Length: 470
Image 1: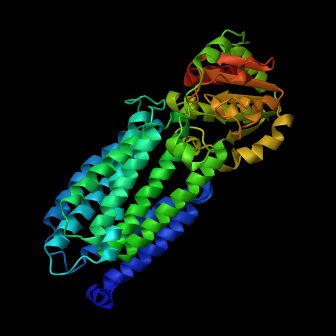
Image 2: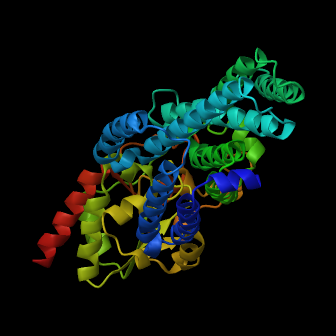
Image 3: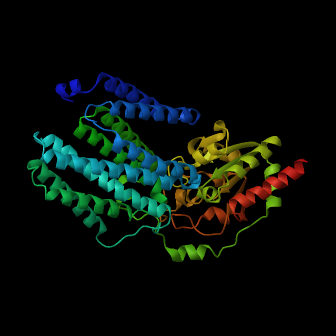
């Protein structure tokens, strides 16, 4: 920031920004562990409130009328969105948040560009370059996040939408956007090019996400989060706001790191995630596999098996989220622990529709944090586990990932449920997961299929266990 600009910022604003920056860093640190995540959220909220109060002290703000109106409108939308939206829709809400954030950044960048054209200060090459990057990332995050929301909400097909020459077209759109941005850096007064940059960014965001299948959505969510953070950081450079630079850099880097973790968990690369067609499987092969026989059981038999076990691992998946069965799962956990059964939860990093989706649902049901085990921690214990209960998890438990090189999930780390002594799977039907392939685990002799709604079936097992305890 230029020294003259620093002097124009009130001391109380600078102090607020310094405190807010420290709180954002602490929030990110505490959010990395389940035991401190609630504190991390609270500290982040306090930091944001302090940042807003500091901004309101800026001398450029002459009236609070429009600010108050926007706060009221945002509150009227945000509070119901947070209070009424079910936990199962958290990924969709997260995608919408990224969309709103990207739109805000893009709009601010657009306003800053046209304001600067009519101002006495000249748009430097550096500022124009950063502004072009801000607009590009902001608007592609907006439309890309909307596409992710549509796929998660199943307004759009969750399968990859691909066509011939798609990668080439996407690359040409990106090259065209970069060319327009460079042209504006060379001559910022070519304002006719700016709308073209906006349109290219919006279109690129759409075409970037539609070829990505539902199985890759956790990585897409974290990657869009990274884009939103980087665009906010670029906006900080444009507005000479150090707090925005710091907050955006924290958001962007954490999202990028999380994306890498997600890709490793899925044995995927960024190129595959962005331009692949994950989720398209040979339907003929899948249909042939579905004709094989499976063993099934009712709630009474399943409850007896669980109640007589010494160790049980519960592996949750999106099916648990859809059925909103997390509270019934908590009741099942309570009943089993009363019997002296050691119960743990095996969490795959990409189970669900966003990173940490299963952790959020289980935390809502007050499952003890120390009962949640990551995939690398629970896998070594699987061969000594009496029963594994899978609740709506498909691809993350499929043994084909270990040995079938023709499988689209080959090489993806999975939870080794097939190594347990007994496997029970709660599913509505034998339909495949988002990868579009059948799970060979379901046809093993040690596996019992428990067909039905996850919430209802777990509830029946809880009743059986409770009646036997009485």
